Length: 382
Image (cartoon, rainbow, N blue to C red; front, side, top):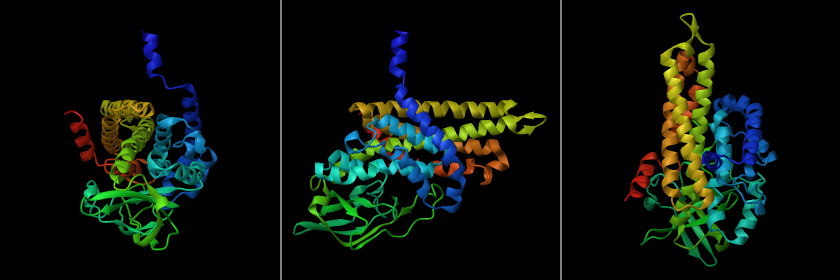
């Protein structure tokens, strides 16, 4: 029985090998850049090219479209490894999934062949445009519209909080197509469409190396072949996407937590106070023990949810919400403690934990706020 239990909980060796290769790339190439990426608040094109060279941007895709075909668990293990060092760089991979999953789940064969291979190769990067200035957690407040015009559509409106604004090659846009019943539809808008403006970029608390903007659509004309899924079924496109991609936010949070825990533990072993390393102080030991325990628990819940996603389990929605909720709350609590352990050094940007604390906060907000995740979990208990 014990041998069976070991098999049930074991991650396949090929995935572990891939994870270790990614870990080495991150340690050697990403970690040394993380502080500068944050301070400069500039999109790290060099890191994106690095990920493309090593098939990391192929992780969200099946083999038939040039991807690795390695599934959800491997994808989120990679996000976790990258986020240990740099949450902004982890978003490069996260958005490759978020912006293409609507096409993977609901697109036509022609759309998949057109858009997915270039994203898998890292040549193109997408954006996902659901939120608006007055429609965040509540898509029913959406004001962006798409109106039929002959063989195509005309889109007008503004989106907000859009990751990859200004660097994306195309935008998956959700717009109201039936005002009376408030039904929405999903569309693909290329960056060079006339009337499209990527908009102004936000100045943010964290994830500063990932551009977040407010794209504007003014009489943007697109052909009907750019419509994703059925007319009026855009909400189901969005929800089925977020059900999976919120695992990315959970993985990012687990990575931030582990990165902060590792750094704080290393610092505590070297920092001398009262004649000995502060790691020998029980107050510090207890903090680190709680940080490590919560992070490990978040990882187990995340990996369980990833396994459900790979199996197509109907319980995925509840578990992905629980994983995102618990992991992001953990990231915030752990990084606050990491700053405390470093004391004054934790508060300055020469050391990475203050950046990790700022980056952790967004994991409680995007991909569905934690209040929304609690609603999803509670409703699943009825």
